Image 1 (tube, helix red, strand yellow):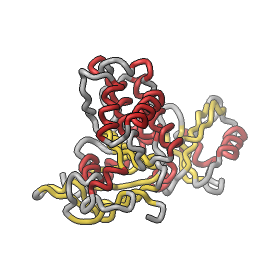
Image 2: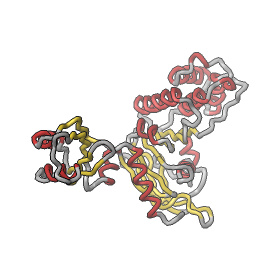
Image 3: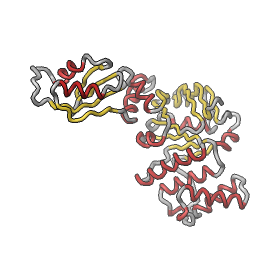
Image 4: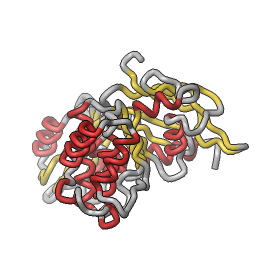
Length: 327
C-alpha cells in the first residue's frame, strides 16, 4: 500500500449520460484525517459508496486497506466503519442495548461484548445516558452513539458522511473533538465528508475540494493557498495613517507602492476596505513597517494575512465551475 490506506486511480462513476465522479485520483495515508469538501451533489457520497463496495465504478480502480471493494466488499466492510448522515437505532432500546445488539452481530462473545460496549460508551461521553432509550437522545447523542457502534469492530478506517448535520453548536464542537481524539489515540484513518468549511478546517490534516464530480485540488491549507496564490504567497495587511503626508494628488496606494518599490520581494499594493494589502514573495513585515514609518506615515497595525479555507474554497470552487465540462 506504500503507506496509503486508501488509493483511488482514475475512478469514474456514470449514471447514463450523467458523470457523478469524474477521473478521481486520490491517496490517503494511514492515520490521516482527510476532508472531502464540496457542495451537495459534488460526488462525495458516490465516492464513499464506491469505497464501501456498495456501488461499482464505471472505470478506474479503488483500494481500501489494500483490498478491492468491487471484488471483495465483505473484507473491506470488516476493516471500515461507516457513519452515515442518518444513523438508524432501535428507539425502544437503550443506548447500551443497541450497542450490545450490534456487538452480537459482530460475533463478539458475551463478556467481551459487555466490556467493549461499556468502554466505548465511556469514550464517547454517553455513560450517563447509557440506560436511556435512544428515542430520548438528541441528534448529537445519536451521532456519538453511532461512533461507538462504528468502533465496535476496531476499524482501520472510519468514513463519516455529513456527521454534524442537525447538531447544535456545542454538540458539533464535542463531536469534532471526539473524532480527532479517536483518530490520534487509535491511529484510525478518518475520511470526513462535509460541506461545512470551518468544521473541515478544524479537524482535517488534508482536504480534497470537489466540484461537479471532480477533485480540483487537494492538500493542507498551506499547500492549497500556495498553489492558488502562487504569485504572491504572502499578504501583509497594513493600517496606514496618512495625516500630515502631502500625497501630491496621488492615491494612497500609489504613494505606498512608490515607497516600497525598492524592497526585494515586494510585488504590489492593493487597497482593502480600511487598510492596504501588500503582496510579497516572502514575509517582509519588519522591513515594510520600518519603511512606512521612516517615510513619515503613521502605522496603526500590520498583520500577516493567512488564507482560511473559506477563501481558498471559494476561489477554487469558482475556478472549478468555470473550467468544468458539465453545468
